Image (cartoon, rainbow, N blue to C red; front, side, top):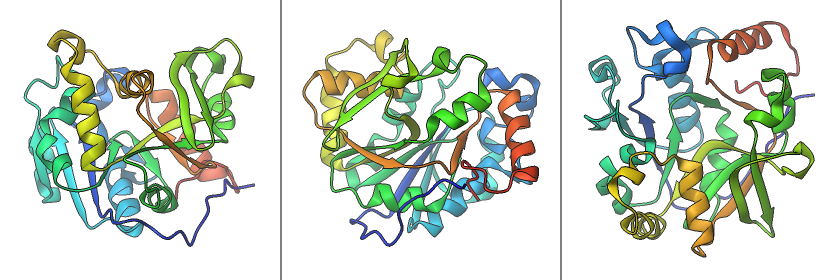
Length: 263
């Protein structure tokens, strides 16, 4: 049975998205020898094309990229962009900082570039009134069990209560304690971005350059920030490895009613 996402949601005033597309994706090896990871083909289209379609169908009209590795190959998309010249030695949070001006201007979705998702995820997240809102998958376990022999090795903690995330990004011993997995989509208002800047200001530059998004969210939670969890069920995928690509190609061709079909 396919994953289900609520429809007909009244969205808040958010029509912008920032895609973090600076990285090469070392875990897919030679596949990114001549292109950024976001241009890897999946089910007949580059992943970036799937994202752009989902964002636009979900109500996003302004899309911006943070580029890095082989940035010239993204020029044909004719999107506003910021460049992270230190993409090879810095973190995804560093790429966020490169686009600080964009995030200060108006509410924006922020997306990893190696994910694909259904447009309903966009509508769900746009509908959150929170300053920081995180999309998470309640059917994540089906996807992880497809991808990993030992899902608990890759899964991260995720616990929420009354719509507020209490814990994220820690190692887990039991999958039963995990309520969902972050799908790589966040909504930030300018106020939410300011909270992030305040959090980062208390850290040294070397630490920021190693920081990933879930570790940043965990720091914010520990500091008392209110981070909303926006749940959905299935209909997205992330590509970390060559095996992920092969799995999704196979599922997209042969599995009717696959819970994580993003199309």
